[in-house]
Length: 137
Image (cartoon, rainbow, N blue to C red; front, side):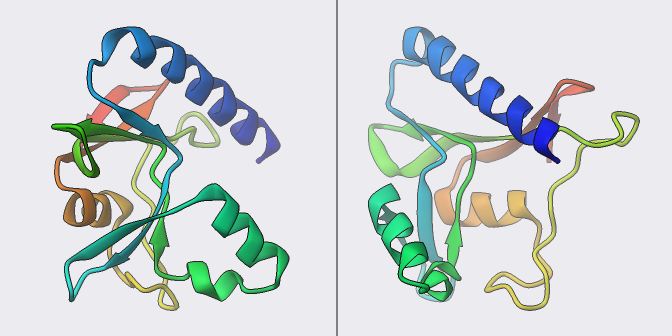
């Protein structure tokens, strides 16, 4: 698990460097969003706010949040996505990368990450994995 976290951190840093020179629109890395699907409401949750809630033992306040790896924003709108990217490092590496399904206790129970990302942010949600490259939904 630790190796996967290290791969993830390295991939995000590499992506940040590449996107800074290639993507003309803004992009977000590991931005947390609070998403209310029935109200079609999406809002950002700052890193400081998330850290404060966790430090105060109020992690349940993050229950309705999503945190995609990278969001390439559309038309300079920080609440809309042109493409949402999520890095997957399956273990063992013979496993195929796949979207995580939200469990029964989640606000998005039974849905896949990609499905929720697309509903919340618009745009296409894509898996990026070293084994198979880019996997479309």
